[in-house]
Length: 401
Ligand SMILES: *Cc1c(COP(=O)(O)O)cnc(C)c1O
Image 1 (tube, rainbow, N blue to C red):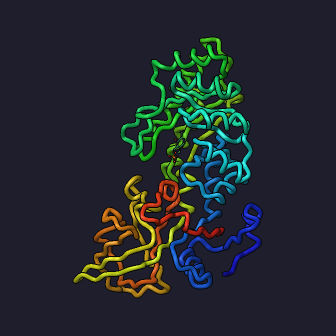
Image 2 (tube, rainbow, N blue to C red; image 1 turned 180 degrees about the vertical axis):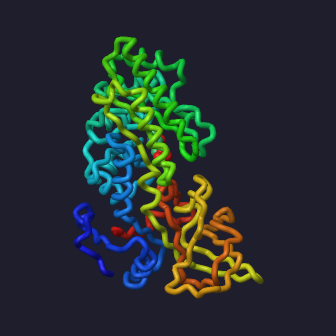
Image 3 (tube, protein in one colour; image 1 turned 90 degrees about the vertical axis):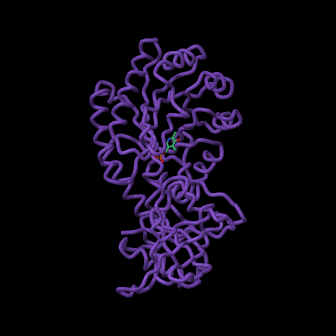
């Protein structure tokens, strides 16, 4: 394989080869991994060039807002290392996630422990390593933090109504308007500092307005804290929910406008952070799977592949990912005959069906299918049902130019 040693990301991944390629020649790269690398089972390609480009795009659209990558979205070590090297912080929700980002080279000061309801042992771990910022939306969390990590500062979380979103986190998290003052008072009584406000608008909505509403509501919390005589708040955390589409620039424009309008007076001393997950993880990962079985039934075709609904492709069921597998053929024959095809995952459950009635050319065992944009909530949500595990899937590092 023609690994380039001069890629800009090489310094980040000292012991791993990074394959340089042109973005429009991704399939050729994947073929060379298979042929020259002798690869015989499903694999990922992580394009660090796309990660770097997404980072630049974030900085252009949201200058001054530091992204704290939401680790739960994809915990790939090299992705974490790249994000850290680019200057990102991390949103962690558990001890294991904090351990992962420390192992990838991040420092504890770049972590927000953004889980409003935490197991005590994990809070004690945060105290031990010096992660000093967490979220809360209940009084019981105040006493827990006071007991286990009294030096920890809090962000009060508030999710605006976004019932139109595909993932509306507001049903589980976020204090209601009438709970704000009691929660601030509880922290004040406990002698804990409330550093600021965080929210998450949910994911999959098309209404970018929600960010404006949330920022306006956050300002009301800053004012409520001041009215209670609490030390001035300094952190505003605008959460995640961003997609790497044109909606991102639209949301960013709404956010910039709302910040100027509602936080104009505080901007010089405000620490602005976001918690994007999907925005950074989705597009850099491409999955190639191998056809391991075939069946012809009249004019329809059945194919089995070596990853499925209990693995990376759980995202089809849990996250609305629409699979559009591409055959990875060296040359496409124009006007090639296609068949209504069903693609099955490798486990023995009939639910493990990736697509049905999908047009594909005739394929044989040993052929390959490619799924694009496979980094968000894929391997992170997979299980080991039937002994098939995504931890057996190799990830090759690449850098597109
Ligand atoms: C899941 C989550 C995120 C990331 O959400 P995306 O929609 O992937 O951007 C950020 N913050 C919190 C608290 C989360 O739970």
